[in-house]
Image (cartoon, rainbow, N blue to C red; front, side, top):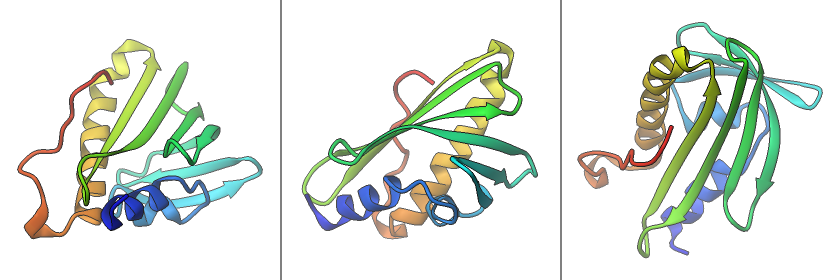
Length: 136
């Protein structure tokens, strides 16, 4: 695993407060631990309560659910895959209800992925577009 992938995996696998602000600066503005949950504040002032569902360090996969927010159901998964010797592919998927929130959630995820890319990839090494294939 190259140094770049190791840095991404190390950042992504943590759940404590504070790490998300470093992973997605400007997108997430604050996180607070509240028991087993994490309260996340976004750039637009929205606050959600996230609960860790699964953390697989070997697979570099993190799953969580938003349990207090605008959703009747929300499950998110972020995973880091090797994409060459010194590169990584960051995949973020969300399943949610109601469907009416899908467009707004997609816009938030796009902004979040852009923030992660800016935080982890030096300007000269950034791809023109991040791979956003797959379901959301």
